Length: 207
Ligand SMILES: [Fe+2]
Image 1 (cartoon, rainbow, N blue to C red):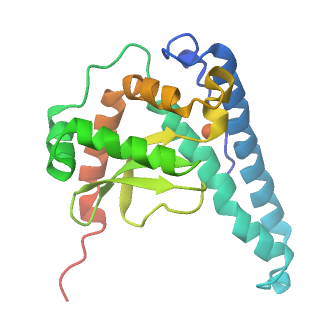
Image 2 (image 1 turned 45 degrees about the horizontal axis):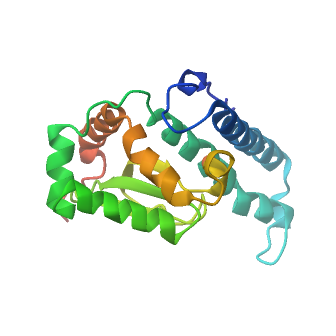
């Protein structure tokens, strides 16, 4: 399948705290991942399976880097999708109930998000388990490492330096503060509904 970069220009001038220059630079980086996943997958169609080797082999290198470009592209789409202009007014009742069940209060949940973003240069993902419906904040230090199985991503927050350096320099804490108000909770709620509809997909009958 060919991967196509989506246009997120609708965000320009709407996300309070992120300038046009910052957003355009970030869009360019995202488009680079889309280009790279197509390049890797094109080369995989030609690579000789006999070159597979743990130490080095063309097909092995392509396979090892494929998830980097793939997740690099699609984590960015999840991030741009869940940014918004004017605040959507906070989490829905369902989200509030699930977040407080697992984190006690919304503020404690956000403190956990902040801790994750400060702890690593990569992503923090709010995810929902299709095994038991619980929510987690997962730290994904690189695009391809840390995404747990059976987790649906409800919210993606980009903590890489390229996401904020133009606007905030090294003041990552200031960027994290604006993120909380930039979350499109309607988008997060739609993802929750989709995740709940998919529960049956992983339910196996008892042996
Ligand atoms: Fe990014």
